[in-house]
Image 1 (spheres, rainbow, N blue to C red):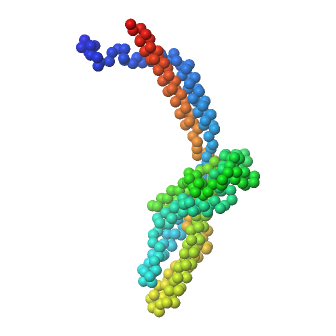
Image 2: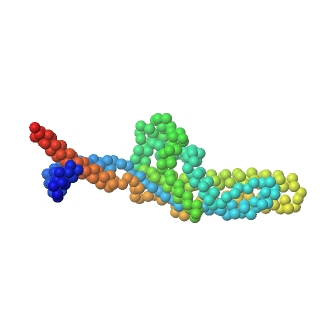
Amino acid sequence: MTESDQTNPNYPSQDDTINLRELFSLLWGGRKLIIIITSVFTLCSLVYALSLTNYYKSVSVLNLANAPNEMAALSRYSGLASMAGISLPSGGAEQQGTIILNTIVSRVFLKHLLSFEDILPSIMAVKSYDSESKKLVFNSNIYDAANKQWLQAKPSYIETYDVYRGLVEVIYDWSVGIISVTVEHKSPIFAKEFLDLIIRETDELIRQKDLQQSSDAIEYLVSELSKTSLIDMKNSINQMVRSQLETQMMAQISTDYVLKIIEPPFIPEKKSKPNRSFFVVLGTILGLVLGIVLILTRHYYVLNATEQASRP
C-alpha cells in the first residue's frame, strides 16, 4: 500500500474492513440470544404448522367417449344438410372437450350440483375432518348439522362459486382428448364423492341436452320431409334422420356418454397440503437471521455510541 493510497479518502481503511474472525467471535459471544430467538421462531412456526388443516386431493383422468365419432358422422351429411337448408353443428373432439370443461366450471352447473343434499354445507360450512369417524365437522356458528339448518344467511350459488373454483380444477389436453379433473377438500371421502358427482352429472347433462336437440332435429326433419317431392332431398333428409336416431340410441344405451373414465376418482390417503416441514424450516431460518441481525445491530450501535462518547 503506497502512501498516496493511505491518504486517499475513497480507499477503505483497515477499520472499515470486515474482520471475519472478529465477526465469528461476535456471533459466538451472542450465541445464547441467537439460539433463544431461533428456538422461539421454530416453536411458533411448529405450532402454526400443526394448527393448519389437512387437505386431500382426488384426481380423475377422463377421455372423450362418443363425441368425436358423432361429429364425424354428422360431417358426412353437412353437404346434404346445406341442400335442405339445415345447419348441423361443426367441430370435433377439441370443441366437445371445451364444452365439457366450460360446463364443469360454470355457475349454472354449480347451481345444479347444489341441489344435491349436503353439498352446499360441505363446501361452505365445513370446519374440519374427523379421521376416526370419517365425517365432516361443521362450523356450529354457521350450520346446524343435526337439524340441517343454516344459522346464518344461506349462501347463494354465486357466493359459493369462488370457493367451488378453489376446490375444483379442470385441465383439458386437446391434443390427445384427455381431461383431468381434481377436487381438493378437507375430507378425502367428500373429495372422492364430489368428484364422482361432477363427472356423473356432467355426462348426464350433456346426454339430456343432446337427446333434446336430436328429438327437435328429428321433428323438424320429418316435417320437412313431407314438404318436398324431390327424391334426392328425401334421401338426404332420411339420412340425417338416421344420424339423429343413432345419436339418440347412443345416448340411451351408453353408460359413459361423452366421458370415458380412464382413472376413476379415489379416496386419497396422503394429504396434499399443507407442507408443515416447509413452515418449520422457514421459521427456523427467519429466527436465525433475526438473531444474527440483532447481535450485529447491538454491537455496532454500542461501538458507535462509544466512539461518539470518546470524542472531545
